[in-house]
Length: 194
Image 1 (cartoon, rainbow, N blue to C red):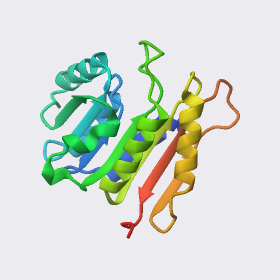
Image 2 (cartoon, rainbow, N blue to C red):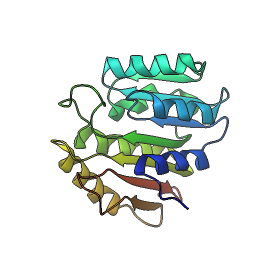
Image 3 (spheres, helix red, strand yellow):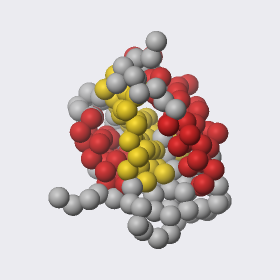
């Protein structure tokens, strides 16, 4: 067996947890790779919400989906992932099966535009509330840039305090690599908190 990189393992978790007809969220569209994967997995009967604060990311994602003829079941929103509940169709409220986040900055763009701890924590908190039981959230934490350590520390503190009665939390990553390699935080909802 080959060990997966953090992002590859996040994709494996999406493949294991999403089926046609499911609802999914890409909290950080970036160049559209994750949004494309989610749309392939949920199919035309499902729906994907993709968020990014940068117009270039939304356009890149839209172009990628169009090239693969998968734009029909995707809603792309140029806004913070922290605001995602405002955009959910009523039928999709509390029906999310999976979500994925790639934190940090948009590859090949302005590195000063980054995900921030306050917005990310709000998004994660809201997404866990909207996640179905057995649903999963995969967060790939890139933390080698300015501001990345603060976001990493805030996420680890938050995730480490989630009640194990309701959530399983996995931290997955290589510990012997240089240049602060990314790691994965995966949160599985086991039961609905009372």
